[in-house]
Every structure is written in structure tokens, then in C-alpha cells.
Length: 218
Image (cartoon, rainbow, N blue to C red):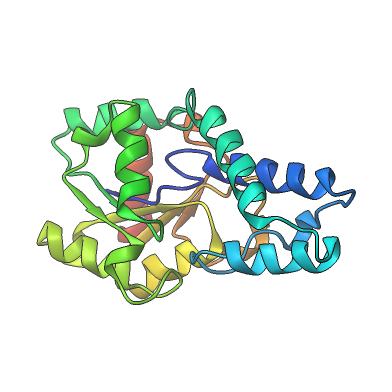
């Protein structure tokens, strides 16, 4: 089982959006949330700051803004745990003897740091991260890296994603993919997913795996 991190294992997407929304409002503007999340897993910080700086003008202090945003998110992340239902899934997976991995476009330090903070890092045999591959999702490189480190062919694993570009990356790597769309993604864009859920809490992992087997045999 190979999990995306941001927005799937932990809802760091909401804290990201909130931190930028606060900065926009601080300068008297409203963030265009409809186009906030990119169609790729790469870092868009510089692009966002370019837009904000252009609106604010010569007096804009990026360093101060970044310090405020970082402090805001760090405070929110202090109590941020796994997304509802995921702890139960991981427990089931461990009981079934399934191997667990993460494939994320974020930096290794970010992913490992959050999982260590919540005491979940040791549950994952493999981390494959964005600073270890040439391109972010939807490029399949990070999933191929995870499979290589697991020593498994794609048909022996299942991916779990919350974004359309994440699903595209998993499918391009040859994986079946379960989508749990985050609140900022349009459900209609997940047509490539093998199965789609509204939340991890709506089913047990055992039942989900049975549905995947039925889908595969069908």
C-alpha cells in the first residue's frame, strides 16, 4: 500500500490554504481559492509570492510574510494528526502483514518530520519523496521509486491519492489507485481512479481490498 502524504495521510492542504488566505487579507486582498491548488505536486511558493508582491507593491516584505505563514502553519501542525480513518487502515494493514510506503512530491524532511511527530514514521517501510526524483506528480517517477525500493512490480501494490494529478502519476506507474478526493478537488476529475471514496471512514481496509479484488477480477 503506497500512500500520498499531503491531503491524504494528513490534511496539510487546508493549513497551506489558510496561511495564504491570511496573508492576502493582511494586505487587503482576497485569495482566488478556485485556482489555488496546482495541477502538479511541485512547489508553487515563488509563483504565489510573485502575484502577492505585484498586488501589494514595492513595500512588500516577502521575508516577513514567509515568517508569519511558517509560524502560522507550524502552530496548526502541532496538533495535526492522520486524516480520519487512516490510523485504522494502517492498523488493519499491519495486522494483515501488508507493507506500507509513502510516495509524495514533498521533500523527504517534510514527510518524515510530520510522521515522526505523530509517531507514525516507523509504520512505513519506504518513503519516496519529491526531492529524490526529477519531476513531481503527475510524473510517475516518485511511484516508480517507491516500487523500486519495495522491490515490487506495480501489480503487487495499490496507491492511495487525493488529487487528480496524484492519480495520474499512480496510474502512469502501472498501479491501481484508490482516490479519496480532498475538499478542493473536483470529483469529476478522478475518472482514472480504480475506486473512489468520499472518506477513509466509510469502509474498512479489508472491505476495500475485497472491492479492489472484485474490480480486478471483473
